[in-house]
Image 1 (cartoon, helix red, strand yellow):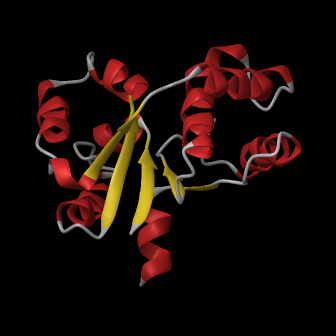
Image 2 (cartoon, rainbow, N blue to C red; image 1 turned 120 degrees about the vertical axis):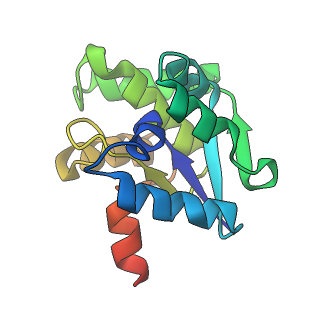
Length: 152
């Protein structure tokens, strides 16, 4: 079964007019057991400030189809490399933590609606260049919409 790392933007996307259709279709695949939703303790922390409907949606995911992972020192080190090599700036450090987490836990795909710092071809090349030079696998990074388009 495929394991998709969901960054925080995907949870919020379920209640955003622009992103809700693709997001809800992807979460339906989680509910049906077709995909494992991987998320981190960073995601949980970021969701503390989310609207109640987003928090409820997160809490109601079927426990058997989710996987919670922890941010480790190894992840923080890799995330710091992304910033040090200027793939993104220091203000995007948490985005880097999501990418490093998905990389180290070997997610099949990192899913995000963040087109500026994550789902961006130039940034993806930068992240993966560092991953490969650091002896980690490259990471597929896609929006929910892209995932659904590839499966049709």
